[in-house]
Image 1 (cartoon, rainbow, N blue to C red):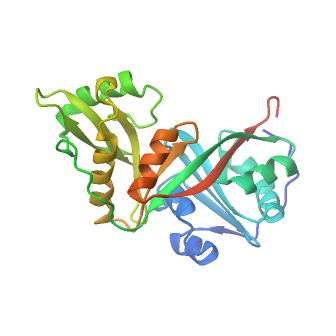
Image 2 (cartoon, helix red, strand yellow; image 1 turned 90 degrees about the vertical axis):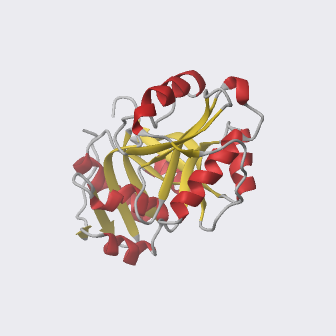
Length: 255
């Protein structure tokens, strides 16, 4: 366990209402809280919040909110209690500042949280629709071929359902998953297109379908996007998604 100096935390948050009251309903923290399901813990200090959720999008994640000094003080208590597998995630300037302030932490990556709160254009290419559970094998084959590093996979924890587009001959050409959604935030993951079908707008089509489906029941829809994937980010922006720059930190080797 990292040798951090420990401080007293003012209180432990127990409800989503507490998180909303302190942060104004920050969507990243509400998503990480996952409805305060078993295993989730949240802490608050003056002007700082941390929410830790195990096995969220295949990682033990700790979303943080607040100023660098306040979050630094909070993490000195929350991180040792949560355990070294939990990686802080939050706004990029905050994560960068934490890596400077906490010797044991280093920036692990930078990426985008993209979200939308209003219906998006229905960019219909093909016939996007929800796939039955009996199509999990087809989805897995497409993910393995087109997006092998996807965090969302059929049967994975928190992965609820898949939408897809088929060719005229029945082949599955594009997919997107609803995964790790909460009432406040519908979440999209696992967007993949067969190599032979790229450049035809199928990813945009299946994403617009899933987005509008989720907006019917969720206040907003979000997803993660890597900065290197410029084509995907451009697609989401055309649909109306806005970008929030995030960072993640991890323990330095030997901490």
